[in-house]
Length: 450
Image 1 (spheres, helix red, strand yellow):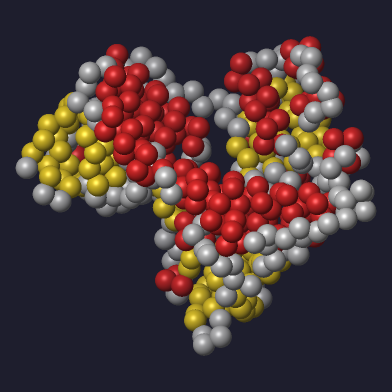
Image 2 (cartoon, rainbow, N blue to C red):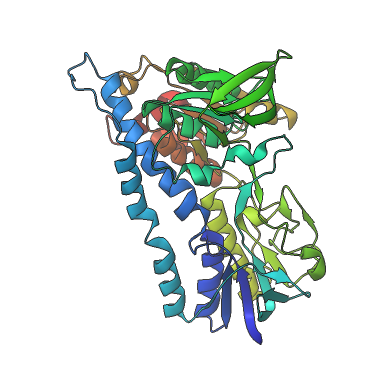
């Protein structure tokens, strides 16, 4: 059966929703199709459920830091109860999202859709044809070319664990591994992170990453760098990870091995070639500044599915959806601007960044000064017993514009948003210093960082 629409959207997450609703409000006939439960990665198997677990770990850590400073009780995480609380956020999402689509008059289809023509998709017995198609599908764990990869637990599976294993090995040293490691360690698990290069968390400032690595090791997490994982085997007693840190062969036994080595766009089975869509398997659909396919002008992509759609973050996906909707409704006129997009790794304490890192600013030939300081002695850190905190801010010579900001410490993921606003708006240090902020807050520390 063939059904024709003005627009067919693949996916139901932030990018997809921000395209579908405005186009429907303009009177277009819209269809959304998703092979997974409606809601997208962030709401169901990413940011939101992860942050619930992080919240529990933060409570435990805060009480631990404050022992001897007026606090006597030591709290503990009840993993199954915490997971039950997490499900109060995730379980209602699919039905609610589907109801909202239906209420708006958007047709919904479940199942994997594949292109069978420039704007035609096949989903089971249904053939969906659109004047336009938007690819806003999720990301998935990238395939690791190691023997025994079938024994890996994905980040999505980790977020559904009813019981926490006693010993967990994380493969990869990015967001996923560090965030989950901080939660698991505070829940009582023994944790190891294996990372193949000398520098984990490569998108963040290396000096602050070094401090976070020290804090993580102090927590009891074993972090092994330059450790290439070769294979995973299953024995009667455990999973055994074979790795070669700095050329030395070692075995790491664990109850669970978690894939934390990166994600890629889930577009490999969409048969994009049948639609004439150029793409890169590890980056996504090749798009122009309007987020329009460079090879098929009636197809757009946003979020994780777009190769140059900004960093793979939920706010960026939502923003990309808004850009696509505007260009579909009024023709290509709105270009994506990914200047000043903040990101954070929700460890305890969190690490956050926005703008340029030092190495990038130097490579661009920019002249700037760097203000870098360790701040564990500042009131805002001492008050909550945090011994690992610091910042690094890059300020352009001559203009006094803020080029980049990097924060480690309590509320870093909140304060970075103020720096993001400054960078995106082209504000100078004098503009930020002129702001009168509530005191004492972490935001009021900003004037001393400039």
